[in-house]
Image (cartoon, rainbow, N blue to C red):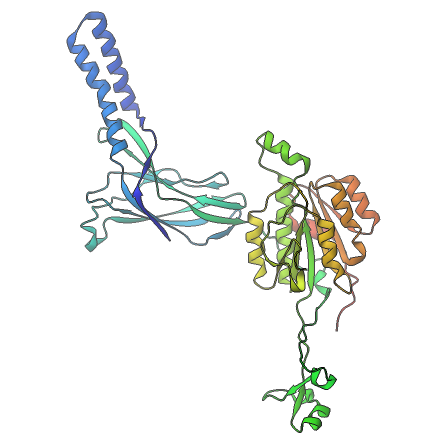
Length: 444
């Protein structure tokens, strides 16, 4: 919860219909005074003009002294689901707050309620007993797009006692809300990648190079007798059992095309910040990644533009030191992946080398690894180089979000499973249309 105690920043006051009518009547009175030489019309016109002006000065100078604390029911929500917000306002002045109306300022992509009356706020000095200086208002934010949004500041509107001028104040500061992509349930389907064990890295760590020592340890109460290592027991004259070799989760790799290509500059020049194809690709990456992590895979993610996702550093089981990759471990990796994808955007490729990065990670495995590529608008030559990694991938699936006929033919000739995805199509439909099974040999 964040509280901000400060005077509000006031926007330029605007006249109400009543104030505008008075100002118009004053102007007409001044015209009449000039035409007919009437002093009474001159006085009346000055009074009618000065009343809205005095009201505007009053509401600008006399700003509310309010503190604001905003709290989300959850700081991370899924696109399309409402975000529930509780806003606590407190009057910090030694007199009652004027009648106010409120609403939260929201960026495009979020929809909030319109102005609503704020409960009365008593003076701060008397509130130590009955808390009449505070009020909590609750509302729901509509979320339509993924992203990281700043909700706030709180906007308070008041009018002068005569209703001549309206002024809007910005109170407090914004608080970030993360809206993550929607995740489809991919189920098992015909493409049952969970049957593939991928490459399991053995994590056996022993200090004595003797073969018997590598697979034996002291007996512990509760160990089954079938695991007793009789040769080691005879040698050490105490009961020894076989040490099972721990294994990590199998790994899989995904390349997300975040290169905006030549169209990125075109969109910036024409003020078009949206891209339905890329949003479809992000939704597909979210659903596919969540499915693989839930199936027990360590997911490594590379990008065709400079790395944006911030999972576990690309070292160890799902990456190599110095490579621009991120890794996500089960079971908590789904949350980290979705939060990272919430802020993902298309960028210029610069010096990114997706084929080199992905190839370096795949070549460290003694057998083929499940690999998925999601293509949007990236550079043709760079993405074509990724197709040459087919012998290191099994299964090897590439999703083309939009028309990339020449590149698709290039992947198809090298044995990749190519799936065309329309902008706005659900990830589950694209996943089930892949319709293949893995030929990876199962580990015992």
